[in-house]
Length: 288
Image (cartoon, rainbow, N blue to C red; front, side, top):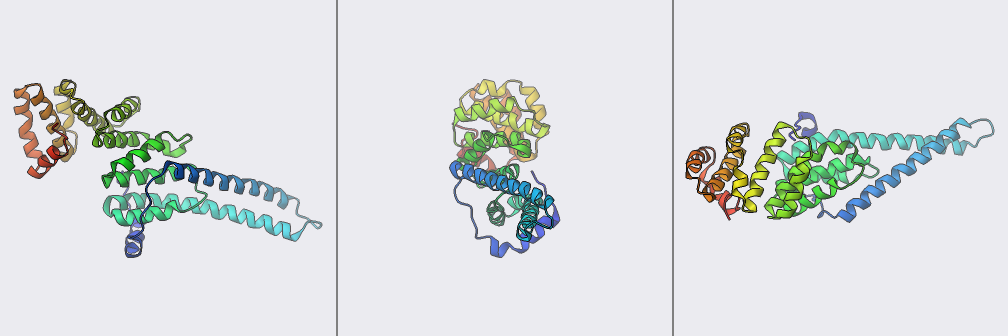
C-alpha cells in the first residue's frame, strides 16, 4: 500500500498550495456507473473511428479526398493522445498513493484531478476509486469507504483492479465493524475466507474476525486457537499487535479466564499508551 517513490511525489508536493483546496464530492454509485459508461462510450467511439480511419488511409490515392485523409490522420493522432493520457494517469498512481499516506489534502486534490479525466481505461478508473476508498477510510469516513468498497467489489470486469480485491474486502469488513454493522461485517469476512491472502492480509483478517466475535458477544469464538493466535500476533506491527492483545484480553475477561487475562494485559500496557487504551474503550473496540 505504501508505494512510495520520490519522483511522482515531488511535483505533487510543489503544487500543494494551489491543489490543497480541491475536494471530491460525496461518493454516488449512480455517478460512478455513469462515469464508467461514459468512459466506455468515448473509448468505443474512438476505437470505431480509428478503425474507419485505418481503411480511409488505406484507400488514400489520387482520387481520394485530401480532407478525408487529413481527418483520418487526425483521428489516429487523437487515439494516440487518448492512450498517452491513460498512460500518464497510470504513471501518477503510485505518487497519489504516497500522497494519500502523507498529505491527505494534497492527495485528494491530485486524485480529484485524475478522476476528472475522461475516456480512461475501465480498470484504471476502478483503481483510482480504490484510492478514494483508502482516503475516506483514513479520514474515518467509514460510511463512504464502505460504500465505495462494496461498489467496486460488485462491479463486473475489474481488469487489473481485481488485484485489489483482498484489500477492498479487508477495508469493507473494518468499516462495517466501525459502523457496528454485524451482518455486513460477517458477509465481508465470509468473502475474505474464500479469498487467497498473503501473510499480512491473513493477520489482518484474524484481527477482524476477533473483533467481529466481540461485537456479536462471542468471546469464546474470539479465544479459539488462543495459543496459535498469540504466536501469530507477534508478527504484527506493534500498534496492531497491542490492539489485538487488548481484544483477546477483553474476551478472556468476559469468559472469566483471569489466567489468560493476566498473561495478556501486561503486553497491552507495554505496546499501547494510556491514550491508545482509552481510545479503544471509547471506540468500544474492547468493551460493550
